[in-house]
Structures are given as C-alpha cells and as structure tokens.
Length: 378
Image (cartoon, rainbow, N blue to C red; front, side):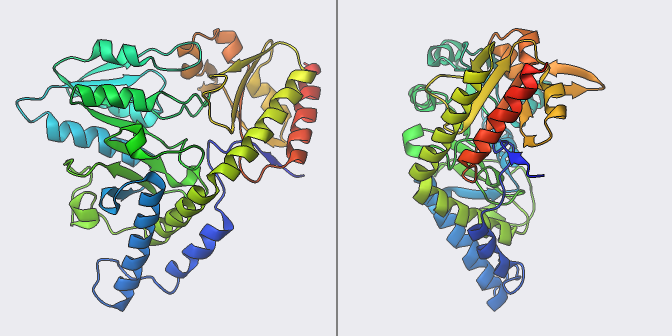
C-alpha cells in the first residue's frame, strides 16, 4: 500500500542529490576537520563549502554561520547565549519578549529562564495566528534584552511580520531572534531584509539530514557558548563537526536557493488543489491560519463533529498531523489553535496538511477521495 506523505513540516526525506554529496564524507573523507593532515583538510574543505552555501541562502557573511545539531540547539544557543552575555552587564536587564505560539524549542527555554529569574512576556496572536508589531512595541521596557518571534508557525503556516518587528527592535537597541525552521527553502529568508540579529534553521525541514542545523549570528555579536569545550566553530560551539550532515545541509541550501520559485509554485498549486477538493466534498470546514500570509505548502483545517485522531487511525493510507496531543490517554487540543481563539472541540477536529516537492496531483486526488469518504461516513 502506498502511503501518501503530507507531513513535510514535521520532516522531509533527504534529497538524493544531498545524499550523493554526503556519501564521500562518510567513507573517503572521514577525517577530523580540526586535523592538519590531508584527511582533516578534506573534511574542513567540505565544512567550509557548506558554510559558504548556507551563507548564500541567507544572504550573510560566512563568518556569521554556526553549525549546530539542529533547530532546537540553535534556539537554545540564541536565547541562553544572549542572556548569559547581556544579563551580566549592569546596563542590561532580564526581560524577554516572545509569542504564545512559538515552538517548544523556544517556549521551554523561556520557561527555564523564568525559573532563573528572567521575566518573559508571551504576546497574544490574532485569529489568524499573527503577532501585532504594535503589541511588541507596547511591552518593551528598559530591561528588555531580547525579542524572539518565529518566522512562520509550524502548525498553521502564518508568516509573521518579522521585518517590521526587527525594525522596532533596532529602534530600541534590542537583539532580535527568529526561529526560521519552517521558512528556509520555502520562502525568502535573507537576514538583512528580515532585520534579525540571530536566526535558527533546521536541516531536516528542507531535504537535508536530521541532526544538523544553523544559528546565524550577526557579525560583532558575542554569545556565551551553550556547549563549552575546544574552539570549534570559531569558539562558539564546541564539538567535532558532523561533517557529512553539514555537507548535506550545504547542498540542500544550494538547491533551495536555486529552486525556491519552482518549489513555491509547485506546493502552492498542490495545496490549493487539496483545499478546494476537500471543500467541494465536505461541509463544516474552517481554514486556520492567515488567508494570504501563509507558507505555500501548509493547510490547517478544522472539521466540525470530527475527532481528528480517530480519523487518522482509520486513514492509514495518509501520513499527516492532527491539531491535538495525547497525554496519558487524554487528548489536548493544540495550544496554537487555542491561542488563536478556536473552540476547544473544533480544535480537536483539526488536521495539518504540509506538502513537499515530491507530492503529485495523483497524491492530492487520492487524499481528497480517501478523506472525504471517511469524513462523510462519520
């Protein structure tokens, strides 16, 4: 049985071209990039080529790229690195601004910092899941040291007004970080246009391997390392580099930068076929997320009178995500959807469709047919 994969926001498969570029670094070029002999130099060259490719995708200097183990580490490195560096200075404070719909890789570090005495403001979002830049401005104080707002939400796909928020942050001399795990490779992520000081990305969200990511750190910004040890990554992240995965990330970045328009057009067309196909066959549907300022591949729908977990259990031919989480047998609706003002019961009937470059028209046709039949039989 063919499984239709519609969960690309959770993870992507590795592009065959990415894998091909990685293989020599798993076999022939196995050296430690810190070693001075020929094996080490070959590995080092692979790492630096990847750094250049990622810098090209983000529109920054190669020295501003720090390789990490993924998006979660990059987020932790940004938040904890900033507070460790700035909170020790007498002129700085202990206040951080974020939103209620951030990924747990932001929310949980924020809660950790709260236990350490930092004050966190969790901004609300509107019915579309968007942060109002005016709300950011209103809560800034003389003690604010960092603003962290995701570039786009992983559940509903709403793209935040990051550049506008970055402009506010610069006006007040506050550092600005954005979690761009869901946007890199899908929409433009040039750091200068976004006006960010720090930006996190995760390789496995755009056809690179799992276990590798990047933190962009604006030139001149000093961060206390999250991982202490030897002087890897210019002293900013200790640990021997994951060379093969970094090489893969670099290749994925090159492909993403070259093919972004092709990718965007393809997933947008597939998404719209899916949306209108379901809308044509099923009643009682609510679209979640911004109608236009949304990731081109993301479709989040709530179905009246439907338990999405039960629906997925009965539809094993499709791989996608629901709008709920199960804890000890008790289902909890998505906190993102609740923050958007969506009714709890409706939130429990939510499915997230996230498409990728390998989806076909036939995938969409089959998905519409399968889901509409199962929903009508409820």
